[in-house]
Image 1 (tube, rainbow, N blue to C red):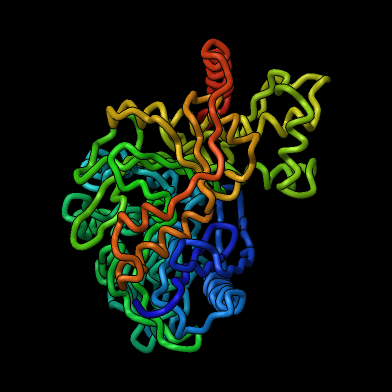
Image 2: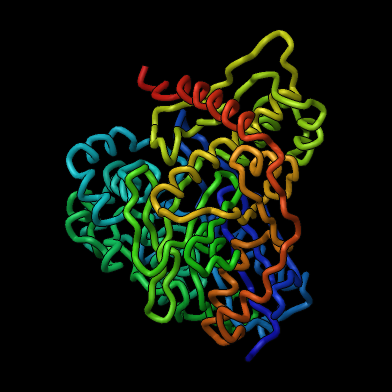
Length: 498
């Protein structure tokens, strides 16, 4: 076992982070930098690709300094990333031809509606996904259609496409001077171009979307040899890549069929491990690889809530009713309920199980007695209700019980939100001691690849519970509140079609 640490690069929607983990899975050093969110017009969300790369590089270097480590101390690097966000760049110069189009972006909604009518069944059968602007493929097509000369250059092999993991990997391993152009199976599955059965690019879908296959990265296992980087003062192998939610599932050690987790970040993402074969959803969930190691894939069902913790940021930056995200718990606790106010945070449409890209955010039940505390509590409840809706259909599709929900992500530190989640769904929420499970999952994948950890049993032994939140709400009250939430949800649907 070479090295004392594993370095995880965790590139997210609102920030870049890097965490150094020791052999016990404990944080030895970390660093974080926010990245700028660009909103060129309603429904459009972009990132500066150069900022993604530079902040992630800076965070990696700062995390090593915080840990008192050098490159020689690091056994491997793992990468976790915001998924679906799309980058297209020039193979020769390394320059992106357009800002990164973020997963939340809705500019291709109309195109996706048309594609769904023509090929919706084919997409669902082959990829395990529904047709939606959420995924990468329509974003790539949009760039090729709207940047001068892009389609010509793509067809000539001069352009490369990648999700954020691929963009980081290519730069880490040399960029125009021989950078590795690859992705892992979890990220590839989020493009709407990968055949779930063969875990390879689907030629028919590439042709239907007008995307030249030469642009696409090589698909590898989540634990694999992705080359090495010298950007941290010495050569370090890159041994693991996974999309952030699959990385969190791995970091939560959900290695057994039926275990489920929810990550509370900008959005909320639930994954349930369903075993060695994909499970087709009839209820609007996605069938997806959980990871692939040693040539063997595991699969999951996934439900995505587009706006989770982002609603707290909106209360801070948009409404100004709190000065920091951490204030929301104390403010919401000053009232015992929401005074029958319901907040549906459908700022970017609704994800699973509704898949309504025309839904918009709605607040119902306002009266002259509504206070900012009621809004704060309604925002937290809106997160919990959305998660409960997804868990309902996840249990129905999988035919597996959900005995507990493992929770992580920034908003999982909010005890009130976790208690509300346990109450409105009716199962315990279990928060681990290390809530940095996305980064930890990437670290595990990389560390296992280089034998830093001996196997899944050793990794499983590291997982420790911090707090367990037991349901305290009566069944009758839970059902009444969820029925009321459904009424509020109906007011938000298809709003942007009007």
